[in-house]
Length: 558
Image 1 (tube, helix red, strand yellow):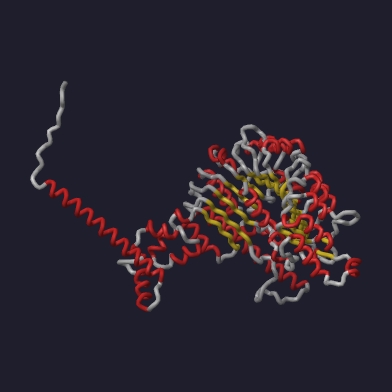
Image 2 (cartoon, helix red, strand yellow; image 1 turned 120 degrees about the horizontal axis):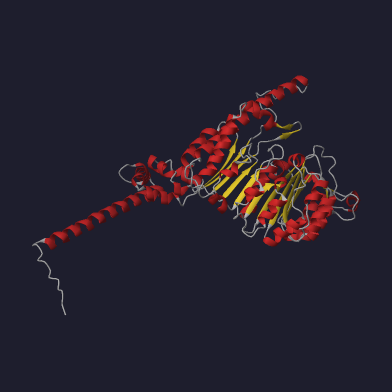
């Protein structure tokens, strides 16, 4: 047997002493650094705490602004860690302490998501440019809403608001309105370009949501389409916006959520082809809502939808959701669809046909594919005969929102909804923007039972009921509150929509309004009042925005 023994080499004299001294010196140096950092942190806390006394306040200011010690000399990682515990307004205030803190404010880890609501105003442009320049290249979730504010209201002081109402006054007002609309559209295009340019190379973007409802309808039609040719006569800006949007889609690598609602000609029928197959296969939410697409063209086809095999929620124009699409969603290679939001707009119904919509068998197949599928329908000025074609019995309808300007929802439609969707319906919104408030349509005309009372009786999951522009009798409102009780979380009825039976008023000695409030409050188990100011209801003043936000939360609540 052979044994290999290692013979230690003789150590040089004093080697152990030199190595030990080096380790001791390194330990002492690290200890001094730790003590220095601890003193700086104490100075920071002392400055933030602001102890009473002039001397302590002076020391606090030195700790915050001094260059040798205090907050300015803290490592960036520590400042970012402190910022991570603060809400966004407090971060902005804290960043005003010194330039070092200001540099740490826009660290990518602090802004994983950005939600912006913008007025279409020139004053917003420099602030938006600054924010997007700082965050656009790394933000992972971006939601932007554009809204033109008070652009159709009467002219303010100095804008000719005091002109007479004659023919000359009407011409002056029309010219002023035209100039204001041109400015709104010009600013809108610049803001959209600012957002898209800043994120064009962002490969980390996972959620991208755009909303821009400035297509306000007047009696003569859509103002946006009328003035767009004046703002962008050659269509260069619109083409640039469309190209930037497609570039963002082609550069994306982690996109899970894509939502575009009522944006002015930003999405084209070829936009989705820019997405790679890998991104399309992992997309979880897709929302394409735009009623400005001309003719019979659609933003997505059934062939294109085959790539999106992992969709959990989908939002489309109802006329674009065809029977072929329903068949694609029931294929075995697609995951079960959980949420489906459909916009039924009179503009789309006029230019497109309802012949290709899914029939009852298609809806049954979709419900069998996904037992948890729920549908949200928003109907703008749809005739009753068209709604009778749309409302198939097998639709798992959970929410429905009617908004009318010209047509009115009939009692037969409300009765049909209460009978067909009694197991699913939770939200029912009925809005009628009538000009003459002296006589609202009565849904219970020529009927033994009020359709709204039957809706509350049959739909046992009803949790939200909002009504304006239709006559709601006081005794029926009390019956609704008693039938649903505390399960009806939201009951919003405008004051002008409530009417009282004259025969009942003659038999009562108490104030009818006070009695109504008391009885409804007792039925709901919570204080209740009629809506006094209709302008406070976003569902009435901004129906598109309300639907878009509700659709977002409806799709996220899976």
